[in-house]
Length: 299
Image (tube, rainbow, N blue to C red; front, top):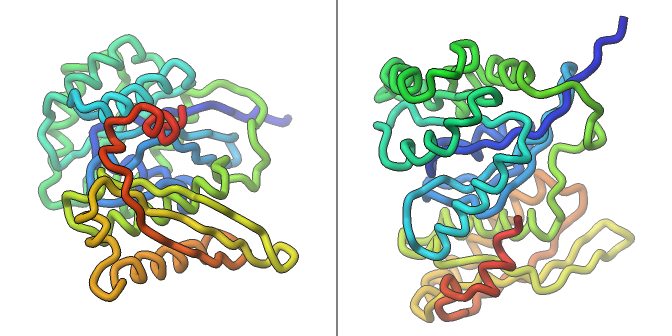
């Protein structure tokens, strides 16, 4: 007798740097979401597709939920909140090595009425300072409607118990047909993926004050050599001339490093060669401009 497969949309929510993007990449088996130690690296609701014998799960990696009244942060919070109603399952990821703060209180208030479709992952249990027992007590007090078998201790970084977490998610999502072909692991457009890879390398290589002040714009793309080569012109956009100088670096050393690392990453993902023309330009105070933010924050 053939068993009906499961199919559902899973929204991942959590504080900045809880490990959401690392988990999504691990589950999808490929790089879907960029990862960096800088909080709120994820700016869009990014889809990763997981296919298993039990069925298909479409994960949405939302931006880190952070309490701040800055315009950019309010937009990021809006993206996270907007994805919850459409989800068949909400996966709340919490860092076992950090004390619950105001963000956790805000998230729990947001999730209080969704206990029936909630799965909780207590992440980073591989860290020496992890205190999963304390986190579990906190969750049992604040979210008593979530059953014990839907609270899973795991490490997204090492992969420990990610299978157990998937089983918990599959127990929540409904039966249904797959939304994407089985070979898909993301539905992101090529230009978006290239821009995100460049942004990741720029964030990892620049000073602490630059990451949130930059975005990447794909100006032109052209497929050449009968589909064997994609030519891309991209701009790393910053807010000030001083930031532009930092991103370029002495003798263009930094921009060359970012370009090389981005191309190396792209080789692992695309089956054609990427010829990358990477430049830097200034767009003063872009984080305060609604048209720019609206274009960047795809909802």
